[in-house]
Length: 104
Image 1 (tube, rainbow, N blue to C red):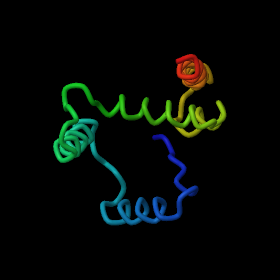
Image 2 (cartoon, one colour; image 1 turned 180 degrees about the vertical axis):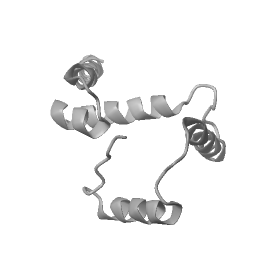
Image 3 (cartoon, one colour; image 1 turned 60 degrees about the vertical axis):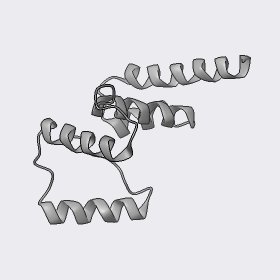
Image 4 (cartoon, helix red, strand yellow; image 1 turned 30 degrees about the horizontal axis):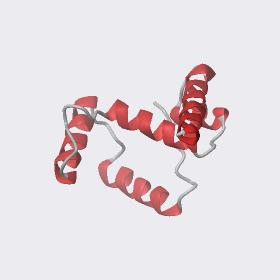
């Protein structure tokens, strides 16, 4: 099980604690998570269930955090990756994206 630090945002931490207290943890499967993501996508209108997956949302979050300057160790620990190289790939792709944006 991975831990996710929410203490940077008191409201998020409070809501997560409330949710876990209410539902006695999160004993759901990946299928249940996919169903919830798909329902959210339908409600968002215009986002495709075929092209948007939980893993992709997680990768997008990692890319955004890297682009905002989050350190490689923070990324590794936040996402629970075993290898630092995984976090480094997000940092490197973020740098490449910034370079291309500046060039344009």
